[in-house]
Length: 176
Image (cartoon, rainbow, N blue to C red):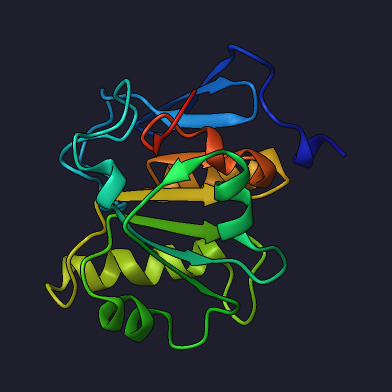
């Protein structure tokens, strides 16, 4: 259906004040995104080239109900400090708060009982209210390209076809 088509390789789309660039199955916001939208944006965008010096120590929290994200990251030889996966979005803000410092928050779009988009919207509200600190990087993941676009439009730093989450250039890894 036309509602579920991903952007073609190398395409660029404008969604409100956000410019999105598609490279393969990866969507990322350009650094030119303005803070004037409802979405809470990171002060430093995760679309910069290469991992941070501390990427091997990242604390990663994933919300995914069907697949082991830890296995996907292991297959991609991704290194991180701590990983936890929540298999549903029940009490999502409490789960994020209890996790402590979140360097990478990964959100599946189709997640029960709240979708990843609804989790992101609640997170944005909590950040704006000063209840919680925004995770350093937020990665959306779905097998449907338009869902990734919507997560990025709402404030995720990048969106991936789920099977490609290990391809984010911000990860530390033993080899590329």
